[in-house]
Amino acid sequence: MQALPGFRDFLPDDCARRNYTFARWRGVARRYGFVEWEGPPLEATDLYKKKSGAEIVEQLFNFTDKGEREVALRPELTPTLARVVAAHERKFKKPLKWFSIGQFFRYEKQQRGRLREHFQLNCDIVGETDLAADVELVALCIDILRAFGFTEKDFVVRISDREFWTDFFRDKKVPAERWDGLLQAIDKSAREPREKTAEKLGDLAGAVFAALKSGGESAKLGQLVEGLRARGLADFVAVDVGIVRGLAYYTGIVFEVFDRGGKFRAVAGGGRYDNLIGQLSDGAVSMPALGFAMGDVVLGELINEIPRASEAMQKTISNDSKIDVYIIIAKEQRRADALAQIQQLRDRGYRIDYPLTPTRVARQFQAAEELGARLALLYGDEWPQVKVKNMKTGEQELVAHDRLLAHLQAQSSLSS
Ligand code: HAM
Image (cartoon, rainbow, N blue to C red):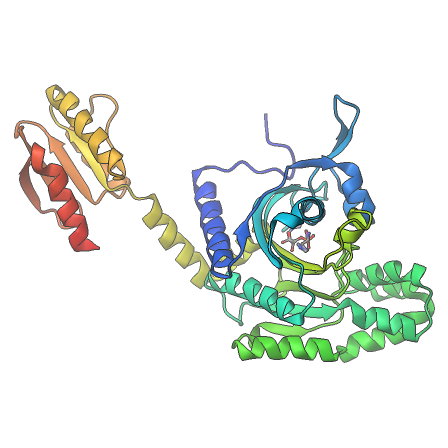
């Protein structure tokens, strides 16, 4: 039996990497004053049909449940956020600054950087129209990646504004029904042959290609870059109107994060979706919103690619996985005494391991070393004294068993 295509097994090392990622996501989001929330993994299929756009609806893992409901595993969090905010917004002061970490499912063709499940960090600000919120959100996205050890040499946030294109279409008198299709064609233009994009753009192809080539600019994008410059973060961003995003609900500033080497798919993406909450609540609650999501798959590839980031991760993981104390039971008669002490030490928060069954002393010391124990406590002939061995220096001392806890506490307060 194997896992389904596009689904991963998380062995202990993979879980350690995942926890490392989640800790950085959570830590920086909290530094920015975001609070954590979560939605359900299964939603009504209609939630995505209404506004996410054709591409995501094609990728749904959906089925009819036993109550004849049409349901789907969530492919993204934004529609759930809009639904939850519309139902509960009265309970919270605006703007809301919410983050969430969870697993998402898309029936995509499995390829590098794209699986059928992945984890995302979502960060969203709800109830603020001012550009200050867009600056804050992009800064948060940059600082999260900096927390992994990446610099402006490793990644770039390409920022754009959908209004640049809607103004452009208005100017060229393009009927509004064509806008969505045109935006999708522009979104795919960097990944598709020029002729295919030209065909989709029709009479507008020449003008669109010219705008893409010139890079495009707008007062709003200029202000956004200046806001980031004031924080010393301007080197992390580039204006690129070729970014319009695949999801249908975006209304203003949009952005995507790529590795500088151009090897991988986007690490993160997001933008403003000022109409989604209103549309999903049939006008009951109307609130501007903006946010982004960062996925763990491409991020993991980028960590592997950049030695600074992978070394920082390995160091943290290896420190986190170490135990404090390994208990060596040299005489089986002492097992009950050792277990009483293990319980006491674990209650105080020490990380303790010991052999479950009788084991040669040499093997026990080997286990202590492999588990990264700082100390080994030996329960044997010395009882009622316990031999305390510093695993790093090899120094040993005898400590009376009823003084052991005080002894360990004094040692760790010295080292900290
Ligand atoms: P998205 O661009 O569809 O945006 O996904 C965000 C990130 O999730 C991508 O940049 C990528 O790293 C990761 N991702 C997406 N699909 C896959 C996949 N099949 N395999 C691996 N990683 C994947 C959204 O989902 C929006 N809801 C983001 C947002 C939040 N907008 C506003 N708030």
